[in-house]
Amino acid sequence: MLAATLAELSGPARAPLRLLACHRAVAWAAAAVLAYGTNGLLRSADLAHGLVVWGWAWLLPVFVLDRRLAAARRHAQERVVARMEARLTAAAPAAPGD
Image (cartoon, rainbow, N blue to C red; front, side, top):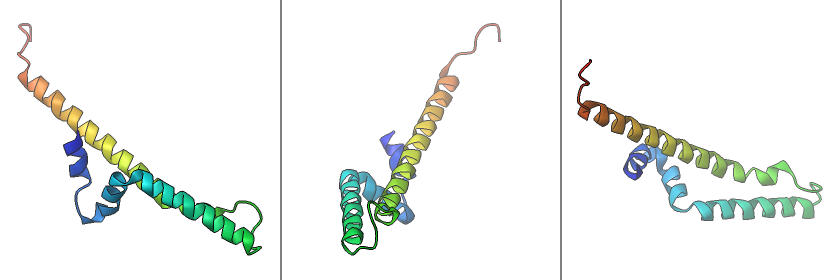
């Protein structure tokens, strides 16, 4: 299944997904620090009171990439299961009544 997931993530367009897969915790931590920092900066400049949406916007790209990674894993798992089912049906002997 790991090989199928890696095949799903191959190609230059999916480089951010591979980077997120390798450094998932760091990406979430960096996005959280940026979100809290942005909120703090907006509050200290009296541009906002409390938590604002603009600060939390840093988490959106990481969340989207995380969901795409989960979809790639799910799709790879479905491909592996379909391949295994095909092998099992091809290897199964025909029943006498068929």
